[in-house]
Image (tube, rainbow, N blue to C red):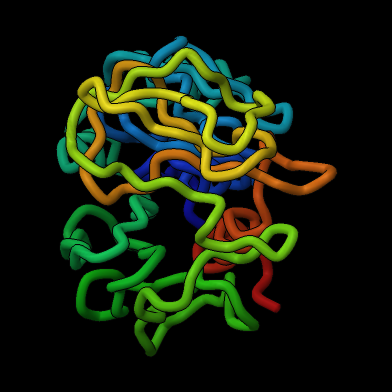
Length: 265
């Protein structure tokens, strides 16, 4: 039987795309993350709903709500995806969701086993093995298998690098050199020049790696961790910094197939 209520963990670009597609498929979906998350691709995600109260991604709205009653009320009213910062384990149990989708997308840490939270737990990103820490997984690494539903094998380990844009891969990113509070007056979609200061961490300037349009930039005032991707510049003549990305779309389709909301192909 298809899942009708789904808790999605992580409101970055992948988790947001999953919530978006589930909502379009008619599921009651709730999106959960930490307060003040430091996701950078905010034009391609619902992250800003946790700061502004609402966010819209390709004509589907998300709204920050505070408690279980507000989630249920929004499910009944329709029109938007509830976004919360409530404890995820308590949330899954209280709402009796049919499925949990872990879209936190850890790069190096091993994901925990959350199979006790729902009849179906779907794992996205490196480190998931069906029968070990999820019931089913979806491949998110670029390649022919991207978006595939995995029931008897693990997701691919982190390898390679970002998909090049205009032939530029790692060079379009800046990672945080230290941990601390991120401060910026720049905005997603803003054009920047190479070496232009786009923010600071604990007073240390952070500069654009090349000229182009800002695609990744955490919200002003959040705490960031040394090593995390902080700034991303799209160098293309026709940059794309808003809307659903290709990899998140593929992952979202895989999740809907894994949950029986769309036919597996």
